[in-house]
Amino acid sequence: MRPINPFRQPVPWLLAIALQTLLLLCLTLPLRSAHALTLDEVGAGELLFKNGNDWQPSIQLGTRVDIKVTGMVARVTIEQRFRNPNADWAEGSYVFPLPETAAVAEMRITVDDRMIVGEIREKEAAEQIYQQAKTAGKRAALLDQKTPNLFRTRVANLGPGQEISVELVYLEKVTYQRGEFSLRFPMTITARFDPFQAERAQGEMPALDPTAEPYFRDPGLPRNPVQITAQIDAGIPLATVVSPYHPVHVETVRDAQSSYRVALANNVVPMDHDFVLRWRPAPSAVPQASLFAEELDGDTYALLMVMPPERKPDMRRLDRELVFVVDTSGSMGGGSIRAARKAMQMALRSLAPTDRFNVITFSDLAENLFPEAQLAAGSYLQDAKDYISRIEAGNGTNMDAALRAALDRQRPLPAGTVRQVILLTDGGVWGSDALFRYIDAKHGESKLFTVGIGSAPNNHFMRKAAQYGGGSFTNIANHDEANAVMAELFATLSAPQLSGLQVEWSGKNETFPQRIPDLYAGEPLVVTARIDGTARPLTATVRDASGQWQQRLTLTRTSSENGVSTLWARDKLEALYDRITENGES
Image (cartoon, rainbow, N blue to C red; front, side, top):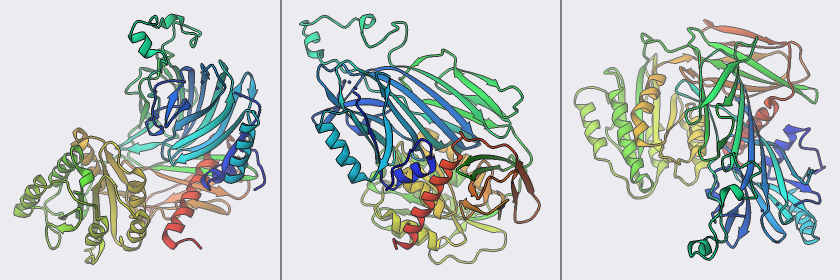
């Protein structure tokens, strides 16, 4: 592969990382130590040193975070400073837990005012060059992605007491659920390691004096201080902007109806709790659409966001057939099965007497409550409530049998009726690609909606299963949320707001997703496209199948900093992986 500069070509850079290439960062440079942990325990950006099979995290001198949101894309820039307190030269690792839908766009490491310059090499060649530099005593860094959400940079030959600065830029899709946008920045760091803890406990060494620690230049700052700023360009007016765990100041950008600045009220806070930002659109009786674009290397990359109208209390409900598929395997034990029971009782209470429904439970085998869907009334509904109250978790996970019971031999639906399959599971399955292929081939008129149970469900499986089934993914993190989450989900599923959506672009284009789903209340549509040439003005026309709603959007000014091209590249990669999943490698 020909070396390229990843910082000037973000789209090839993303493609290279996703295809398991490595960023090799070589220069003469160095890094620092703390409490033992595994990589899975890392909850924020950390500089680590190897200690046997565990890692020792360093003390952070300071962190600055800048978040820029454009529609549904967040560009997050992190600058962190560390010091190597070791008496010897050492090899360190900078580790950052990325959100699942995030992609690294830029990476810079600076030691003593010298910046590491990067280039892309094939994985094996990059590893070889890194080891050669390390053996020769040179400072070198090697970047890779260990898992879909764990980004790591190894840095060799860091000198005693030297400070290191890490700048990381990543992009991710903003989450939108239950009528609200949200973004989470991870910053729950591990406790400081004290190499003389045992001696201090026995009185053989004096206690630490926090004000005398050499790691903090300003004793008035909190330990592990972080400064956070954000700018939200939502593309639509907002009703609220809040941070549930940190006091913030919010101001509207002058002469911009949909742009807002956010800053910590206290300017600097300790890194002891994840930072969460949430914003809610202003209510609207009609659909709203916004368009963003970026020009790069002679092409235009566009992001279209469509928000459905506000759900009205008198909105006509659809006639529905609902099939609930509930995981009762051993991995659902404890709080997960309690949350599933609670969610199902709420779901059953939400059914209208004209709805038809069935319940399928599965562990080693799948079991249908009724031979076929029944009206949600009388003894059928009571039988289902009694059945759900008795389910327990145990045995293996045979989701294939459950999905076949839900999707095989579907009877034709009456006109105006929709069929919705609701899968409640923690997603602990093997052979997910085969399940994706089956869902894609067999869901037919059914829409599959997945509900993740527990604090750590298999988000990748849940999201992709819903995508292949034409539905969406919702998470119930703990059983206290079950009622609220299921009530909102069922209100959403009661009526699609826009069906048969079509998007027409000016100029030759490549667009994702290629199959546009129905748009429900509280669920935005996000479409990315690459348009050949720098089209001015850029135009997108959106219309529904009935022709009752359409909107033409024209953009005459584009930007080069909002990451739309990177999001498009990630969407294309996901589509390529989906094609491999569906058809096998060729």
